[in-house]
Length: 159
Image (tube, rainbow, N blue to C red; front, side):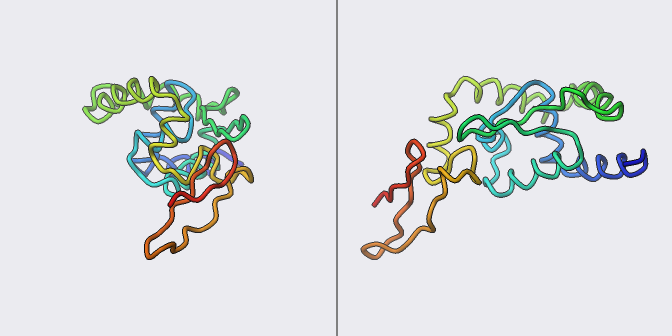
């Protein structure tokens, strides 16, 4: 990828406020997907898409540990990404949104990811593409929707 392609990919990835907020948070440290979902207040699928765009642009990397998915900034970033990792959080430091996100993430990281994940959505875990957490589509049961629950990698339908 030449410089123009890299700048175009990175600029496009950071052009969305949610992706920018996720990137700034990841510049502060590694995060579980459930923590990013909690910070942004968006659905799992939306956050997953945002993270994949950041990943495709080379702004973040994925680390899977069992059924958990963690994102972090690259350990060996390109010169452009290295500058962004240093400059973007610095530029946004005085932003009220960035300050609120930082306070919120501090509180979020105190919550056990397993509890956070369970609280967010009983049918997902931090690795929505993991085979262990392949949740069947919610189905009708006794006139209401049954919600699948992911418990230690096993699918169980909660009535």
